[in-house]
Every structure is written in C-alpha cells, then in structure tokens.
Length: 357
Length: 257
Image (cartoon, rainbow over all chains, first blue to last red; front, top):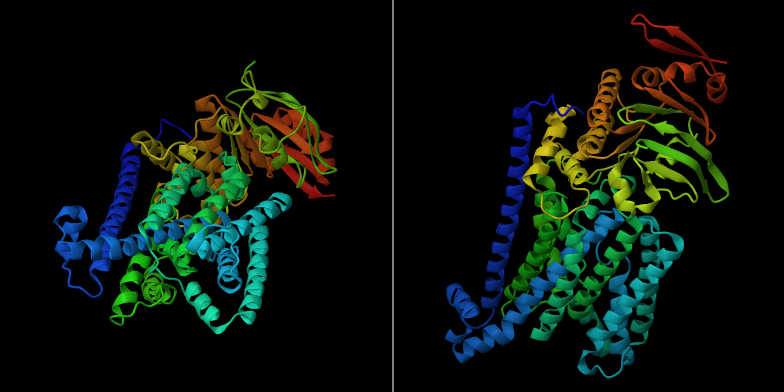
C-alpha cells in the first residue's frame, strides 16, 4: 500500500466522518444516561404519597432537606427499589451483550445456558423442601440457593467445554441440556409442593423488585464493578470476535480463553441478578439488540449502551408495575416484555439493515 | 541475518501429517514470494505455523534475527501479520470500524487521532474509501476480501502473509490488490508471502515462488525456474506449457492431462 500516493482530502474526509460517528455514539450514550436518571426519579415518585419531580431530585442530592416522611419514603422505601432496577438491568444488559458476542448468536441471553432454570430450581429447593444449600444464611436462603445452583450450573458447563472444546455450538447444546434437566427437576418439586408453596414459587419466578434493600443494591453494584472492567479491558478482542474466530485469532485474540473468562463474568452477573429479583430473561435478550441497532457493535459503544438499555427497560418496568393499577405492584417478569416489545418492534421496522441474517 | 527463515517445520492434526520437514531459503526483505500448490497442500497451515497460530515443536522460524518461538503469541502476531482466507461477518460494524480494530491490535480503549488518520489513509490507499461507512454484512465477497487486505496493510508488521487474497475478486481487482500488496512490501521493506491459485498471477507479481504439495516443499526459486520444474505438472495433475506473452512476460497454460 503506497504511503505516498494518498490523496489527503479523501483520507481527511474519512477521518472526519469517523470522528463524527464516534461523537454521535458518545452523545447517544449520554442521552440514554440522562433519560435513565429521569426514569429513576419518576420511579421514586410513582406510588402513593405526593412527591414532586424537582423536590425528589433535591432530596436525592441533599438528604438533609428531607422531612422525616420524605426521608423514609424516598431513601428507605423507593430508592433501593429504583436503584436495584437500574443495577440489575445494567447487569443483565451487559451480560446479554457479551453472551451474544461470545456465542455469536442473536438469540443468546444471560440465561441461554440454563442459568435461570437452575436458579429457579435452587429457589424451589428452599421454598418447597426448606433446604438451604449453605446453612446459616437465615432469611436469605432462597436467594443464596438460587445463586449457588446457578453458579454450579455454570461451573458444570465450564467443565464440559474444557473437555469438549470451546465452540459456541457445544456451549449452547450443553446449555440446552441443563435447561431441560432443571426444568424437569423443578416440575418434580412443583408436583409435590403444597398450594402455598406453589404460589410462593410462582411469585418468585415472576420476579420482583419489592424485596430490594440497600445491601442488595450494594452487592449487585460490587459484582457489576468487578465484571465490567474486565469486559472493558477486552473491548477490542470482543469486537474482533464478531469478525469470526479465525480473524480474531489472527489479531492475537486467544478465543477459547476469552470465551471462558467472559462466560464466567456473564454467569456471575446473571446468577446474582436472578437470585435477587427472579428470572427476568427478556432484558438480557433485548437490551443488546436495542444497543446494536442504535450504536452498532463496536464494543466501546455497544457495551455501555447495552447496560444502559437494560437499566432503562427495568427502570421503566418498575414504574409501570406500580402505575398500571394504583395500590398494586405487579411482578416485573410480566411487565418487562410488555414494556420492551413495542419499542423493540419499532426499532426492528425502522432499521436499515438486519445484522443477523 | 535479516529476512524470514523457516527450518524443520512439522505439523500434524492428530496422526495426520500436514507439513513434513518444511524448510525454505531465507526470504528477503522487500520481496514478494508466492506460495503455490494444489488444494489441501498445506498452504494455510504453513502460514498459520509461521504466524504461531498453529504450534509446531522443534521448528525454527526466524524473522530478522529473532527466533519467533521466543515471543508471546500476541507479540509474534504483531510482527507477522497473517490475513486468513475467510471473512465471515454480519455484525453491526462498519468497514472503518473493522479496519480500526486491526489498527488497534487489541491495545487500549481509546482511539487516538493518529489511529484515525492511519485507518483513513489505508482505506483511501486501498481504494475502498467509498465503503468506509458500509456495514460489513452489506459487502460483496470481493469487497470483503479487499477490506481484509486493507486490514492487513494498515498494520505495521515485519512480515505479511496473505492467504489467497484474490480468490473472490474480478480480474481488475485481482491485479489491483496484488499490485498494492507488492508495492507495500517494497515500500516498507517487509517480507511478503501470498498463497495463490492462479499461476499467471504468481508469475507476474512474485519475485520468488515456493511450490508446496502434500505438505512438502517441492521447488523454490525464481518464477521461471519453478514453473519449468516438472514437479509442478505432476503435483497439480495437469499438463503445463509456458510461453512468452505479448509484453515479454511469462505465460502459464494448463491442459487437462
């Protein structure tokens, strides 16, 4: 390639075009973050008790101005719920984005590999049989069971892929086997459960933010802050993986190692999320698709936008679950799809190119 | 000694030997070598062994006085740029994005101004500036191949290995891509290897030919020497005649035997 025969004007125009697109992508991420901030505030003011938008923002930024009633409603009741929605949504969005990337499959989500049925089974063990996988965790035993069984499933998958080679096909097939295994085991437990236990189990699976507490928000945030930096560090490798394994390998990506480590991160994110709020798969599937359509698949935009899209969906869900019928908080698992799908369909109809033909 | 030297290179998948004691004369800087041979002769495997993507024990690959086995996989791939044959992508990535990916070589997060300029120049010089904002999934096979070549040439490596860079291209672009590759190798004083199926292209563009068949090096040398070697007809299973073309160039004619 001659470094002499270039026409600076054309190259300059190309460089300017690229910088513009980068800037646009950055602005889109900023817009999404701003919208997310607004939905969090709306989430806090939605529900019984009259709170105004500006007053709420004021209290959030300066807790000392709150009356004791405001303080309890905003800081103790509403904010943990609103923030758990954001953090869990971001976890699922980021996990889904990388799951789709490493499996090279648009239908993958954090639960593709059977994680959510494993978590449900773990919860069922606690609810129906009263078993705690780790004794002495007290009232958290449903959550802990769900987490342990989900992580155990990932580890099994890990072991399988170590033995049989790390191809997306092998991972998906083993994942499907896990899914059916845990669904069958779950049915067993359901069959033998009492009506009350069954109701509890169904509610758990439908997902809920109502059990949100500050420590839960904190744990989720810590997990997110542990896993995300790794994904960020691997940003070019993950982008390269979308060009096919061979191409990525030629650029120096250790494809098997990348798949396994990212899978570990995704599993951790998904297992923590699902054990706290229940099985809400839709966010991890659709969040990344929304990101892909809006900012493309350069991971520098794709990863943050997927997390933001996930957070936005779940935050919107949290608002809707309270707003549909005043006084009733619907399970979020039901609402996520209803909120996300219309937006998703609009995007599908409007985009210029399908990237997964 | 500068240049690329390969000695004692063996490679097998399980019990199936792909490469047997491959060795060739030191390839000189600034020269383009064409690797020719029938399908499944081991051309891609040889490239991958040189690039370190396939590991072969006891072999010695030396590039400009550095024993490549002493380098980490990533460092080796920075010095030896390997362009694989296949390019399958249907991602929401533009041509500019994927060339940037090659320019960045997995380093850092930020794209510097120099990175952006280098990519823009490479796209322009590669004649695909008009495709910069196209999504990779929208490209034709030929366009994708040209993007692949630009992805390779944007990198500053000491050796470049192109696996069949012209297989999907029409006549004009075959000539255009090979001229660019030859020019880049000369300008950068780098070592260039191209796996080619078309012997006329090999005769026309390469300074040096290596004939490989069934995992062994059968002949090497100047194009006219190698093309006159009787082994070439034997390994391809065809009759080969040579003639001088209207521009005093060597033409290769193949007939079914």
